[in-house]
Image 1 (tube, one colour):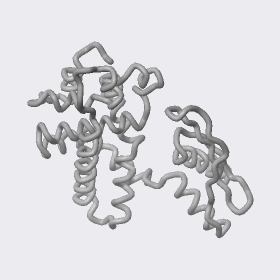
Image 2 (cartoon, rainbow, N blue to C red; image 1 turned 90 degrees about the vertical axis):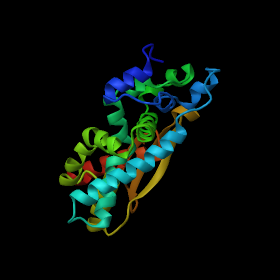
Image 3 (cartoon, helix red, strand yellow; image 1 turned 180 degrees about the vertical axis):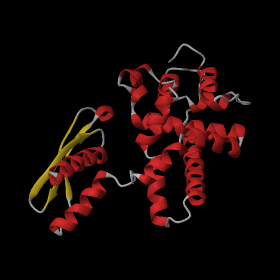
Image 4 (cartoon, rainbow, N blue to C red; image 1 turned 90 degrees about the horizontal axis):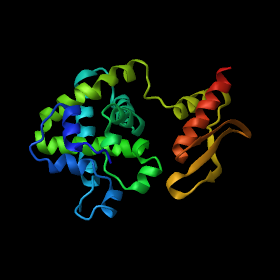
Length: 231
């Protein structure tokens, strides 16, 4: 764990003074830390649960008010792209949340401070803590500054359309077939799995990709497939 006071460091990053310092401390506590610190009995997953709901609501509100010409399906897609794991992890890195996160030595040794899902979860937990301590208005102000600035780019460049969706559209248009994803291999211990997936259209393999989850590996395979069909 960072030797500096994690609460003070977080307050500097957020430019906010917490009334209840237990809330940010819990937000920065991974469940693995409880095994090593005898005086800690709460981790950040409940705050993450709350932050996830607050985040979804405020992103939905922003999209509804700022894109009145867009229909529900598009708004849902824009929201998904805004709050997806990689997007939140990127914002968590900007705020240096990985370095402030309290976790076990074992989790840290396996790269826990830079894992996308841990960083995204911590970002959501911080949102939960911010909401409980400061209220909805200040939480919304924080998100407008740190997250909502990405929405215009997502909408204008249609970054909400992921590689799998793009490749599916092309495959159905060109070949009248829907791509299928199959597991090639699965390697490594449970906490560091690497999956390899291939994408097939008909009987032809169009791309192979690797990732820390099947979903990420499928996306990597779809990216390779897009390169192939675009050539």
